[in-house]
Length: 140
Length: 131
Image: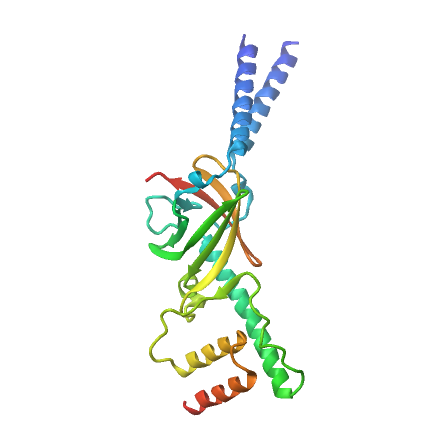
């Protein structure tokens, strides 16, 4: 009897784990699902200083960190890749760039993976630079 | 017999727990990534820092070639920006540029191929004379 119960528990755990993995892989980003406000990495939606990326329905994208707009421009989603054409002030990005005046244009590609309904992971690529991030949807 | 079945059952439970553990742990935890590092800001800043480093080197080499009188000029310094970023117009130019800023601006013009090496030298000398 005990053996039967244990077998059932093990099968349920394994089954649930497998189902979870499959459903996560089945999800794919769409224009509609990408629209919204996303918080990056361990940031919380309630923390104004966290890094946020907002994809608008009209094709505009805005990146915000420490309560300030960091980059703004346009987004396009194709084959699970997000293409960003944004304008950003280098002086605001890094202390070492504080003397650079004006705005620079960037073309960033984010390769996405592990997409679920309310989160996805991505690797942002710009030239020889890559950064990993996990984006979680903010409900409001 | 009972002992054997107990081991088998225990192994299955252990396997189930292991599978659940693997499934619930995101690949993020496998990366040695600094979570505090900015995502988009980091990639843009990193790119500028590396590109500026390369640009400075190319400018220095170009200057050294010019100073030694060797090598012909084939269309400005640097060879342009390759796909990463392009310098956008500076919308908020300060009204009074310091000599250092003027020299930097001049460097950028030269790097973009907007002025000839001769114009660069003349303008640079004029800025230095005005200090």
